[in-house]
Image (cartoon, rainbow, N blue to C red; front, top):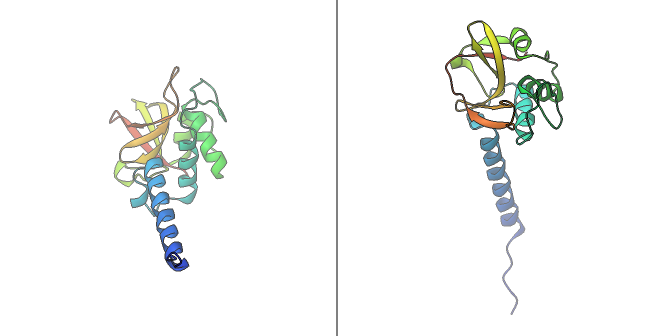
Length: 157
C-alpha cells in the first residue's frame, strides 16, 4: 500500500499563502502602517526599507553610511539608495521637501524635530507614530516612537 500524496495544486496554494503571510508580516515590522498606506510613494517606501535595514548600525556624528550614521546621514543614505538625492543636513533636507501636515503623513515621509525655527533632527516615518532614526552618540539606528509634538513633516519629491 502506498502513502497518500498531496496534490501539487494544494502544495502550491499552501506555499503561496505562506509567502504572502511572510511578506505582510515583514512589511508590518519594517513599517507598522505600511499595509494601510498603499498610496505611499514607491521611492519613499524603498527609502524606508533601506533605513530599516540599517537597524543596529552605530551612530557616529557626520557619518553617512554604509556602516554608521548620524540622523541626516541615515536619511540621505536611504533616499540616495532609493534614487533621490537629499542635502546633507536635517535643516537643508527640511527645506528640500514638500511640507505636509501630520494628518497627511505616510510611511517614507521625513519627520523633522525642531525647537522654534531650528531643525535639529530627522528620521523616516514608519507609520503608527514611529520613526527609523539614528538618535545620538552611544546609540544605534532603531525604530522608536515620536516622543514630542515639536515635529514637522516633509515629503521627498
